[in-house]
Image (cartoon, rainbow, N blue to C red; front, side, top):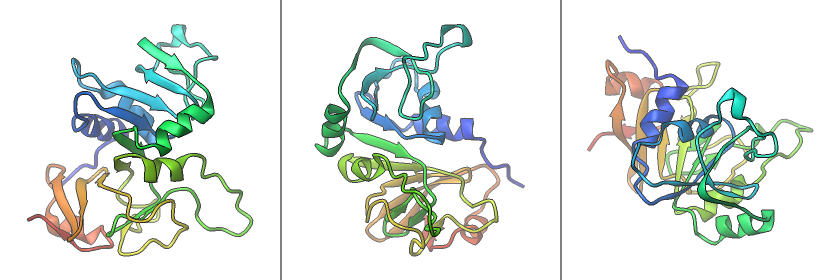
Length: 213
């Protein structure tokens, strides 16, 4: 018997793997939870694509400043030494390879590291990719944080993405509510699984071959 991780637990698990001294962009949605779980004593500089460097954890209710928000329009804090800058400068950081890690959500990730996270490909759907494409190709490492399966139970880790791509071959690691999986040249390698989960059970919920060696 196993119990999938909550979103907070997923954020806590991912935060443990961010090395000291990293410059990290946290994408809109689930990834922003990581900011509240960074290990004490580890210097990690958070970037937001709307033009912030040095974001801190979410503010307390009585400390919210509606003029200080992240790219998802959520209130944030600014650590000592943090800065604001023009949107164009922010994208220059993203595109110029200055971010060590980008954490993004995902709709689908393929076994070769292809990422689809901006559109379900529905006719007439408004484009809403934002800076995801820039981050996917600009960050040195791309971590995807998402539920292992969609609401209808279909795998979100697949052999080939069915949705429009955000980036081709860009994903390095996937964090789900069931496992942590590395994308390698030889396929998907399971880094660890939640307590009670077996590789056979995990494979049954995954649309691409997994290995542990």
